[in-house]
Image (cartoon, rainbow, N blue to C red):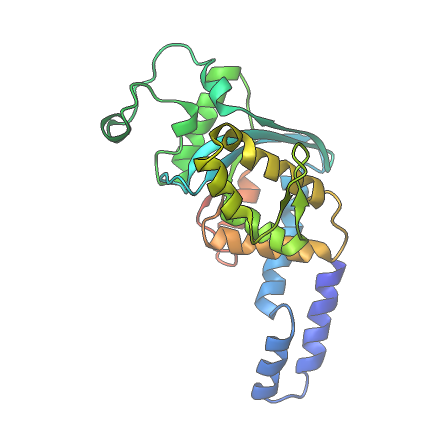
Length: 268
C-alpha cells in the first residue's frame, strides 16, 4: 500500500502546473493511472477481510478448464480448499473432483440440457457450474461439496487458464513439482491442450499442479510485486476469467461497488 501511495504522490506532483496534453503523457508513461491506483487501494483495503486477518476463513476453489467450455467459463477439472487464519495461509489442498463425486449418495436429477446434450443421467459436482449466473453456480458447487464431504466454506473462487496466464505474466514461469516441467505464460495453453488430447490421465490434475506451483510463487511475492498480481486479478475479473462469491457482505459490496464494478462478485 505504501508503494501505491508513493505512485499517487508521484502522479500528483508530475501533474502540478502542467497542461492537459502533458498530464496525459505523464499518465501514459506511469504504470498506473489515478483510477487504477484508487481501484488497487480499494482491493488492498479489503484484503484483511478476505484473508481473515482476524479469525479463520476457507474458500472453495474451482479450477475451470476453458479448453472445455461450460457456462461459467470451463469444465471443473479439479477443485481446491484454501484456508486463511489470522492473515496467514493455513492450509491449501487440490483435490480430485471425480473422487469427491464418487462420495455422493443417490442420484441428483441433472438440468435438462445436461441430460439431453451430454447424456448425463445424474448431476455431479464437476458439472455444478451449469448456470451462467456464477452466484447460482457457486451456491450449487457449495451444495455438492457439503453433500459429498460435509465441508462448509466462506465463499467460492473460480478461475481458468487465462487467469493463470495473467499471474504467470506478472510473476514469471513456474516449475511443476512432480515433473519438473517449466510452465510459462507462453506455453501454458499449449501444454494444457497437449494433456487434454495425448495424456488424459495427467489432464485430471494438470490445472491443480500449475495452481499449486503458482500459489507457492505468490507466497514469495514481496512489496511492490503485489501490484502486478493485483493488476492481473483486476484484468481477470473484468474479463470473467476470475469469478468470486463471498459470504462476507462487506467484501462482496466492495467488489460490487461502482468504483470496482465487478458484477461477478456477490454476497451469499
